Amino acid sequence: MTTSERYLRIIEWFKTNVPVAESELRYRNPYELLVAVILSAQCTDKRVNMVTPAFFKSFPTAKKLAQAEVDEIYEYIKSISYPNNKAKNLKGMAEMLVSHFHSVVPDDVDELQRLPGVGRKTANVIAGVVYNKPAIAVDTHVFRVAKRLGLAAAASKTPLDVERQLTANIPPELRPIAHHWLILHGRYICVARRPKCEECGLTQWCKSYKH
Image 1 (cartoon, helix red, strand yellow):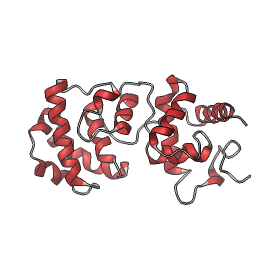
Image 2 (cartoon, helix red, strand yellow; image 1 turned 60 degrees about the vertical axis):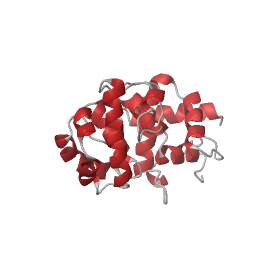
Image 3 (tube, one colour; image 1 turned 90 degrees about the horizontal axis):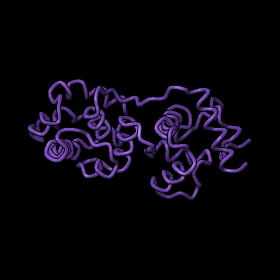
């Protein structure tokens, strides 16, 4: 099976069996999603969703967050992984969002990466989810699943390597949802330690499955 055939079959399976795939982070606007994605680094979406309601009640806008003290922000997110760094980054992000972008979350991946706490993965999430740009964010789930399925070379070393291969083979209009397909598949089926191959509908095209 060629790589292009594998992509075709896997994409068709997802389109048929997972027609709706969305972020599990709860948010109401681009600012809230940006905060949630920053908080979600090396942390579960479930934990982030437990923290954000109170956070957004106190800091409903970038301006409000920019005016807060780091210690105050920390108190709301201390149950999240790396709360000290994330509190500093959230304040810095909000300050730059207000001063450089008039409180409007940018839709450009390079512009987004200027914000403190925003790396390429986070920028791609915002561009794809909020603005439906043809971006694919590669987190640990996407990185693992893409390599296991054979959508990316097993020797791929970095998220950017995998991102380039996915981008080269997935049509632009499908990239935003493909990002969610792979994340959710990695979160619930193709898990890190003991993948649930018996529950997976992709085994006939999976490069790492032992037929």
